Image (tube, rainbow, N blue to C red; front, side, top):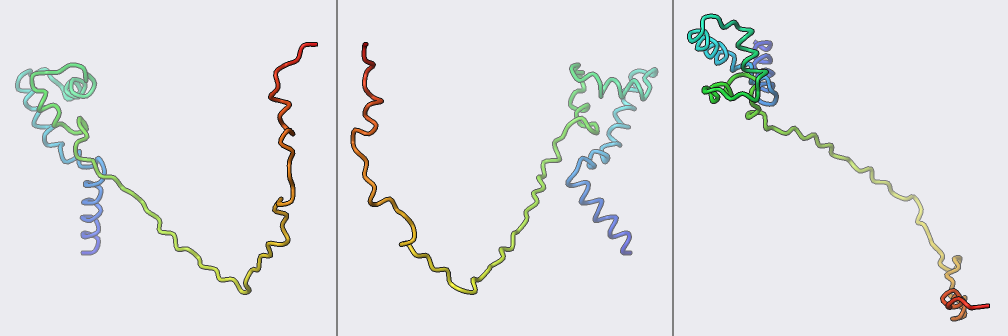
Length: 128
C-alpha cells in the first residue's frame, strides 16, 4: 500500500511540475495519426511524425489539432520552483565590553592649509 501511494504521489508531482504531463497526450497522437491514415493509406507513423514535428513553418488545415499533440506546446508547465534558504543567524555575545578611547586617534584638528597651496595649478600658462 505504501509503495502504491508513493508511486501515485511522485507521479502526480512530476506530471504537475515537469513536462511529463505531455505523455498523457499520447492518445491524441494515436487518434490524429488514425485520421491521417484514413485520409491517405500510404501514411506511415514515421511520415506522420516528420510532418508534425519537423515542418514547423508549414501550417496545415488541422493546425489546432496539431498543436494539441504531445510536445508541440508548453502551455501547462508554468510552475516556478523557488528554493529559499532561511539563514539562522548566530548571535554572539561579547564577554567584556569594548572601550574605544577617542583621544588616541589623530583627528586632524590642528592642521591648517594655506589657501594658495593649490592655486598655482589653476593659473594660465606663462610665456617665456
